[in-house]
Length: 240
Image 1 (cartoon, rainbow, N blue to C red):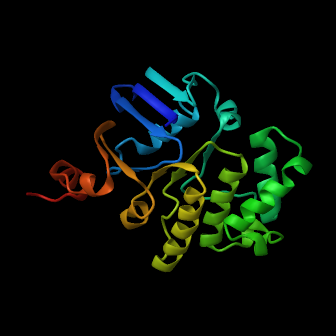
Image 2: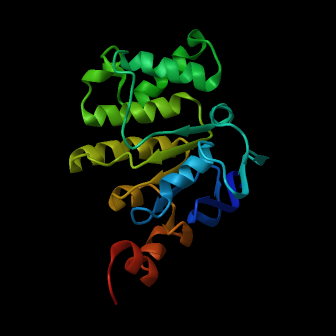
């Protein structure tokens, strides 16, 4: 199975603080990988290294077999990395559809007319089609999260990065959003998902990776990882 993403010995420090410490893992095409860890574990920094918003001090990052360690962030988008952010920040004065057109045109390097049909399909997949002409500034939190997901999908990603997209939602809203993510994954979308809402994460991903102080302390099937004594002590704060 082809690896969409592979990290080898990736490290990043800010002064004396090492926030990513010799991280290595790969994600095969079509798989969903969840990333968990306590606050300050280095999860968001890891995403910023994958997207090119930060450059590592050491190590190698490959996308579809190509070394992208020093490739600029915008080029990585056009190579196939799409990302949602924890706090949605759509263009509030544009409609939902216009937000998607903008993301697709810039992310794919295409004219808007060439990406219209793809955007309509994404609106349908993310359950936003009925709100296509609504201004993004008037959306509920759930629909803003859906739009954040849709904008990431509009860039045509080979790899979709989700950063705590379920945060702040009610239980019912979380279930609705997870159903959408699960449906996208069932279409073959490769996903890496950082999330604190564990039941949401575990209902989608095939593997879990645990970070603590920038180091990978475990990676494997969700049930195996959550049964680990070390993971429970570090992540859940449970003593044995």
